Length: 172
Image: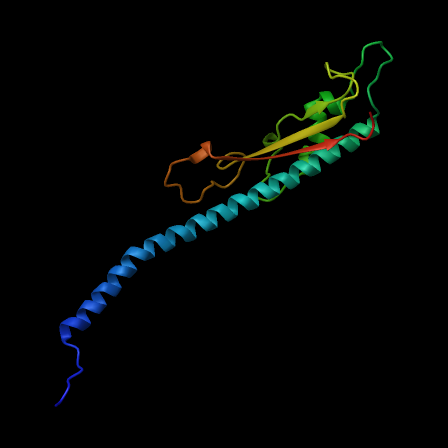
């Protein structure tokens, strides 16, 4: 008795068709996963660089506050040094010097620092003195490249990343 182990031509065509269908269904999902991974990695990198910029700014502001001295109470009411009250001073001494290519391009990306100084501005004595700095990445503004690169959800400038750091002041 003779056995024939040959596939018919229709079986081979079916295998090719099923393989092609599987690739057509899976390939877009793989491309989507790759795109999401790349964009999430970029967002994480931008966030880390914003955190670095805000840490540096908060530290430099705190050091400048320590250099200028603490609150001036000679007039009877406490008055803070210029580094606390004047944005132009903050820009010239700190914010204008912090740049990270295509992430921090302008001093305008930094919000006004939040100062907590005991005895000034209604802050309770005994509260640790600190400065908090925030920096915002809004793609398409301040000379920044748009983010995300491919924008199927039409987020545009509504998508923002923010970094924030608090630094405790040494001179109270």
